[in-house]
Image 1 (spheres, rainbow, N blue to C red):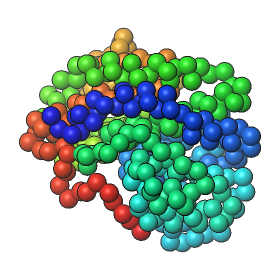
Image 2 (image 1 turned 60 degrees about the horizontal axis):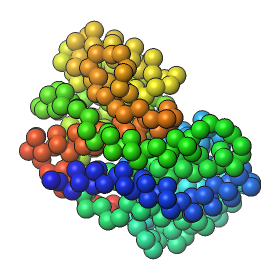
Image 3 (image 1 turned 120 degrees about the horizontal axis):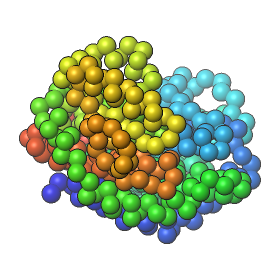
Image 4 (image 1 turned 45 degrees about the vertical axis):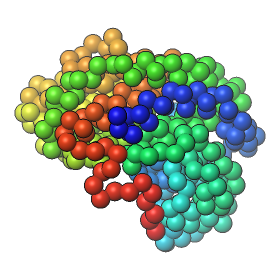
Amino acid sequence: MSFMLSETLSIPAILQRMLDEDSAVRALSQQWAQALPELMITVARGSSDHAAAYFSYALMSQVGVPSLSIPLSLVSLQQPPLRLKNAWVAAFSQSGKSPDLIDSVHYLQQRGARSVALVNTPASPLAAVSDHEVLLPAGLEQSVAATKSYVAMLMAGAQSVAYLTDALAIDNGLTSALHLLPEQMRQATSEDWSALHKVLASADKMIVIGRGAALPIAQEAALKLKETSGIQAEAFSSAEVRHGPMEIIEEGYPVLVFAPSGPEQPGSLAFAEEMRARGAQVLVVAPRGTTCEGLLPSVPTAHPLLEPFTMIQGFYLSAAQLAVARGRNPDQPRFLKKVTQTR
């Protein structure tokens, strides 16, 4: 069994631990509630940036605080005169060692922002420079392809938003839904996604689609298909793809659509049907019971914002198996290393 596969199987237990030991993220949310930020800035790269994008979507959709991912070169190299009164910066990182993340947080603090580091490595330089730390309990990740640390970042983002809404008396049911998530993630390990292997067994390029909270999941899936199977997978919103990229989708072209329930789902399913009519090989990840052709079933959750969790759990397991079937080692992608330090 690959490390990627075994680490994915460990995710439900990690999420349960995060629910049981949530004092740091609760304290962070309480601080936000006492003086609600007017702006949230995220800094991250790779899988961590996808987790940050999910956090931004959750924060904006549930609380209404504007949140954006800032280009790291803008702050680490350009150092513009930003005005950040009552702003926060949330830094997401597996290792907490990348110089551009550390420099960016330090500069944004100088411009007036408060900061929090969400990291999976104890005693990291990123946490040392930040005002607050949320240490993720995923433990040592041996596969270069991040899985458990990514989902732990998703969980920390979802928890912080859920606890903030509780403190603000916003009744959205997110906190109670989170407590059901570990068992739902365990159920997700038994879903049958063999159809994905048939479509991608010899694929060299494809498009991955998501919208809303599913777009960061689509971006993460595309990255993992590049890393572990060498497939040139590109992620787009089901709306944005119509502005040019869908021109390359023709007969036989693989398309993977993430379509959680919610207001974005009808448009995503309609896009899937339109591409299937062209002759594309279309697979749709959606909750069990969704009426569509080419369904890869995911486990429903008690809040639509959490459906991307069970979707990525099923995807990771399938991606690890797909890589092996294609003759590759998902734990050691070519030309990559676990800790990437950029400036």
